[in-house]
Length: 166
Image (cartoon, rainbow, N blue to C red; front, side, top):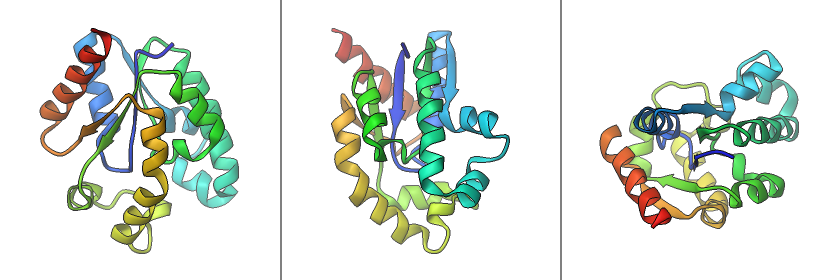
């Protein structure tokens, strides 16, 4: 079982925070996108473009199952919550939702290859937030403000995890 799982929109810092938490706890971190890429032999973006979202979500679910079986901090892809099976798995874990304002997300995006945000990233993020917020809330023990520095966000997650245990 994973030590902690992070969910949230693209660019909320899930991978960076997972790495920092793993360092603080002297354990591994696992990124479901990286596991997916190992499984399919291409980038997550390429796989999504070539095989479609349904096939991508199936592969993502398998990566999530693998990640949750490890004693690690897990960062997930932003859309992991879109499938009921993934939400069921996440609801049984110590899952935390990283969230911040759209302006912060836009600053962080840069020129990453994110097919679901390609045409108009701001509009896409607004649409994804509207679609996914209820699902993030459904699987998470707390919503964490992901604006600020990596150290600040990591501390917020550590504080929430500590409160969750006590």
